Image (cartoon, rainbow, N blue to C red; front, side, top):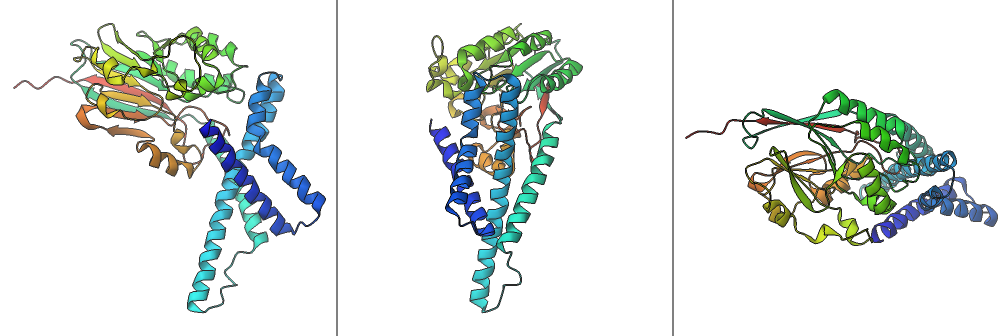
Amino acid sequence: MVIFLIFYSLYGLGHFYLFLKLKSTFSISSTLNITTIAFLLLMMTLSPFFVHLYSFKGPANRVRAFAYIGYMWLSVLLIFCIIAFSIDVSNLLIRIGGFIFEKDMSKVIIYPSQAFTVSVVHAIALTIYGYIKAKGLPVERLTIKTTKLPEGINKLIIAHISDLHLGIILRGERLEKVLKVIESEKPDIIVSTGDILDAEINHVDYLTERLNIVNARLGKFAVTGNHEFYGGIKHSLMFLQNAGFTVLRGEGITVENLINITGVDDPTGRHIKSSGTNPSNVSEKEILSKLPPHLFTILLKHRPRIDDNSLGFFDLQLSGHTHKGQIFPIGIVTKLIYGTHSGYSKLPGGSAIYVSRGAGTAGPPVRLLALPEITIIEIIREKPDIC
């Protein structure tokens, strides 16, 4: 609830900022015009909520069109506000400099009409560019050498999917791209670190059949992300199970005496009622300590939070959630919050973490300086040193 309040507060402030820019740029004075613009901006502020609400009852095509309009607008507004605010700050610094040095700086000031035009044009252009970039799917490769693979097993290949966000916007076409990459890599294990579904999940059940066709010889494993809970955990768990995933909710397993895989629920589940018992209260350390320590251990965890008590009990934590910000400069915020918000980092105790940028998009189908990805991880056996 707090996250949604923060989001709508910031989104509302963005629309209020746009309203002030419109009013000052075009000298809008009529009460009717001001009221009309304010009403329209209020409706756009609430559009993500309306999309979610409409998705439960509306026809798929109409909901999708409505979602595209609302979410593309979100991207345009975000980029507009960043550019316009940067111009405002620049103008303020120029004026302060002129005052301090007693110089006329009017010739280098960017005036309201110019600033508005520059901001709008760049916001639209960058949104279109980000929309095109979001359609790509680069493959990131990670190689890890370990002495914890059994003798005779020289390599295990793991395909890591995160944050696909199948829903009203991303559907079959996006899923096909992901599955074609996975099929071509022939992985031994497929893992999903959450948000394989978006919050609007009422129109994607038919995709389980295609997902279920793609398998790996050692299995498919998944954990919940926050969006699985937003969309309804019962529905989400059924989707994942019908798609062939073993969903790990606060448990660990040893796969054919080759590798340990552990998964935990996203903490969102603690605040939203879910079906059955919620195993999120079991500590990671307790789960991990029950697994054979001589085998390579993977921890699946949606958010890239590190539990210091678990360090040394796992070899590799796989996470997602951040999207590397998805639209620059949000990545600066995710970096400050999580530290490792993209890529590979070593941790104390011989552990490590890899954070995926995600295969899809949340909200706007736009990515700016934060490309999507599918991750292919090769775990290679290294002979132990003999003293």
